Length: 64
Image (cartoon, rainbow, N blue to C red; front, top):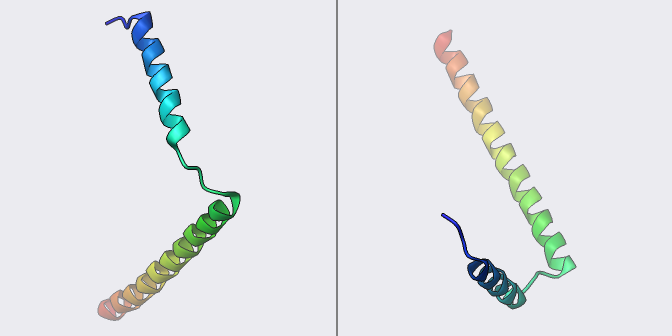
């Protein structure tokens, strides 16, 4: 299926128009959101680590 030159031109023009409407985050917002994602990731990792440790102790007790 071949796209016409007109269809490609229209797609690019429409994409450019939509990109003008995007509200990009400020540098500070980007830094804040990045730090938030890192903090949440570390919190979830710690939570999963604690749960894993507790379950591991429980399984060891069952085996003995």
